[in-house]
Length: 124
Image (cartoon, rainbow, N blue to C red; front, side, top):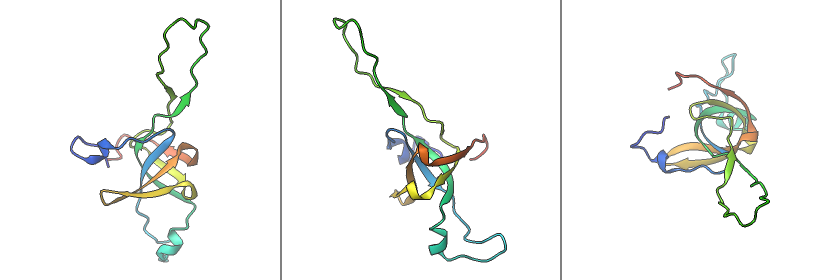
């Protein structure tokens, strides 16, 4: 799901080190062909999904100025996150917070809960 000028995801701002992910639909079927009930698939510890929006990152402390007479700008600087919009993220489900926005299910989680990222140019 891409952010386009006409959709409402553009209005969302993710803060700090948080990442908004649209979970992939799990088939609920094992490799051997058994169908699992939803209660079992919901308890999976590791999930995957598409990175939709990314927060600005970790705030960096302002350096201490030796010249107090200079005017100071209180502009916050951030160390950016590794995740980028469009990546596929493998993440820990136990740290995810599920939300629903405009009828679509998303999860928000900190970058530290992401185990691996898959970056591809042709995901969408």
